[in-house]
Image 1 (cartoon, helix red, strand yellow):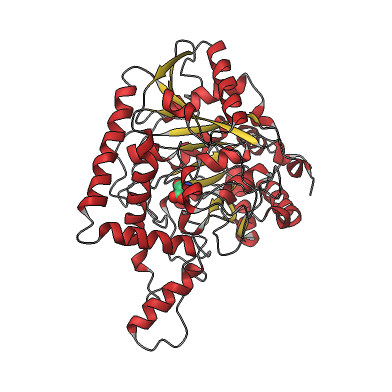
Image 2 (tube, rainbow, N blue to C red):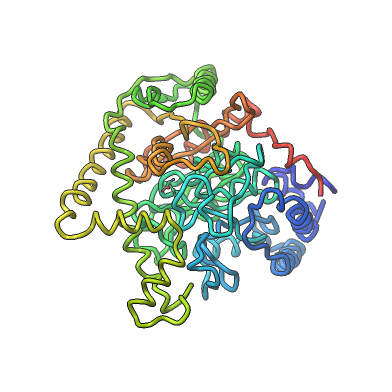
Length: 492
Ligand code: GLN
């Protein structure tokens, strides 16, 4: 079979359970595609063929013995920020170049327990700081829709791998948009769950009060399958929430688009830098939802201007603290011949961290230092609360809120935006993390250069089922999520 990579997760599960193909055949198929095509996309940092085939054989045995789960034998890729026992985990940083974790992240453990087969680890911005995946120490990943463009970031490897059909789905993390923006740039569906829904244990920390893992795939249905595996309370993550997990797949048709009230924030559609094509495609998708029975309601989100400055204080502050553990002593990169302890710290960190990570450590350390703490960090925390309240007020009147996921489509590789230009590109995604809300990106068409455009739907707390269900129904009535980049059409 040459077209296994065209099948949805549901079709893969059916095919495996009906023994139309084996997990070994499916896994070999993906490994062959990676070997042939990934030299152009560069989505994988590490491919693990031996382990994948061993896991595939175990999955085939479980399928034969009748003790398989719904997803046993289906391959996936993990962002290189999830710790994987025995397999290198770099977080895109030279400082973790040779780091092999002694344990699995809870998300990885759960995917293994579900019988999923790990193909390998995919590229990302260094420590998940960025919007292009170019800051990775192994180099840039290409956008499958236009190889001279970025796939977005920081989960750019996850997005590129799925969009090039080099994995049926993938895990990502989202601290300020890193699932939704690359999903948008690569024409995929990606869900950032409510803070606390998915365990952060074993995920290399960037900004702990904002970090959250989620699925990236072609459709809402495919995302729902992965959510069913990774969601849930975990005693090893103190901010993970003890709350019953929905059956996201069973709930896919449960939310009625008819009568759904979709909030359209006035402030969002007048943002300077919002690309005309992005605006047009997003408005067309909202029209479609209106035709399907939704009501569009204009709303106010008055704190919009505060999103970027607030996030770019809180996230670096937390990062400066989280990244202090990389000191050349316990693990990771160590400089040659240190003169003394101070020299060891200084040179190991200067050599190991790239420029964007260093910039954020400096900003964060400054914001947290005595004398500036109240003026910057404490103030940002207060504004963060106001941003959250702004959303809660909006949700008194609407069910979900619509926005673009990003003001533009994918940038060119090497476009070399200034830090402020780059940060402003996160305007639509940051507030969701600051408030801890769930949000989803769905592909809704293309710009004049044939690059994908994404619609973002933001939900109230714990509304993952609702978001997946709305997008699922939109996808039953449209075919944007079925479009494939030329490179995905290539056969291995
Ligand atoms: N682009 C944002 C940043 O650079 C978000 C990153 C993320 O969600 N990990 O911080």
